[in-house]
Image 1: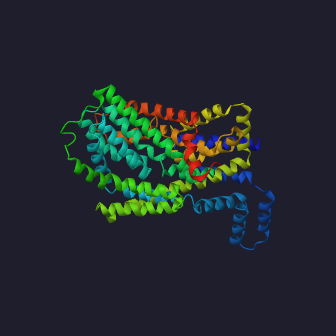
Image 2: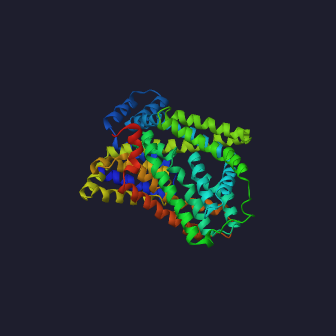
Image 3: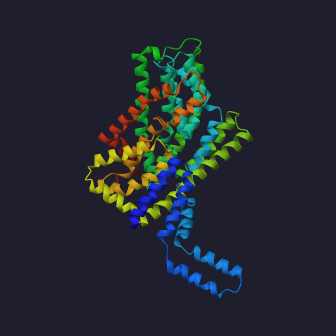
Length: 473
């Protein structure tokens, strides 16, 4: 068996283990070390150590000599170096800080005030409660970047309110599921930080490039909600006095100032400091974490228990991301050393695909991977397989990254592993069926594809802001 064939076997075993439910990070590390031991095996180095066994006088020395011979392989040096590289990566330092900001904001009781305010302010807009729910989801998702937290909290807060207002169950469910996923696209997105670390693309250019596509997708969602409420009023009836209280304009302005603007100001401050070069992403993330704590204190929601929970969840999620990187780096280094990356490249180039066909194939694969896998696993493990192929087809890695971020919205909305739907079903009233949640989410999947088509047709949607702020590459 040739080394490239061994590499493909390594990839096949990994995919099989994923579907069997093995922990992905540790599976990557085990396969990387196991196949790496074979790839970097140097018999002369091992036997030099083993030959010393006869020179040793006692059993313990003989044992330690045997252990030295067994571990006399470069894969262990590679694994240690890859671990150090990940843990010292400055880009990844922003991950725990942004996560901490999100978990603190989640526990500061900001979201219920925000939804109530937007619901009152937009009561004369068709589908007003759906509009308020989507905007709240977008802001909250942007602040946290944690899909499960957004969908769960908004499902507890907004879904009962919409159902009480006689909204169609499928329509209401789709709004929350789609809105909850926006945080992995709109900056300050943790997913974009992870992509930047995996691809080497500047995180500030990624953030600038994601702004207009993110706003475009939000605009498409809002257009659908309002348009369907106009064309089919039964799915989103006008709110009655029992659904939305009649509040004087002056009080509405006060509510907006105390609920909407603090969170919006925090997000814009973090983004502005990054985009205008006033702070690095890590420094901006630290500002965001501090700002989240100040907001929680200001809303009198900061307790030691909530702080401890936020720290624990931050550490747990950060550890998951970092160990995925360690495993992925080790796995990909061995896979490339065995010739697997070159074999895939030769296979793809041999298909004589056009750039458009390559993008369609790549995005289709990522779309299908989104069914069984989390976005973090796709970005860290599978996207790097496509990155060396981008120059061959003249595809900018910034453009490719934004396409992937858009595409991964669908991974939370499409069965069989539509995690947003499962998050919502877990806390929804029993009358809301899973099939209704799926059908309500489906129109938003088509809007994601529409947004991807607009990006390909008008690439300046992605490149306008990066070129304006930082110059054309």
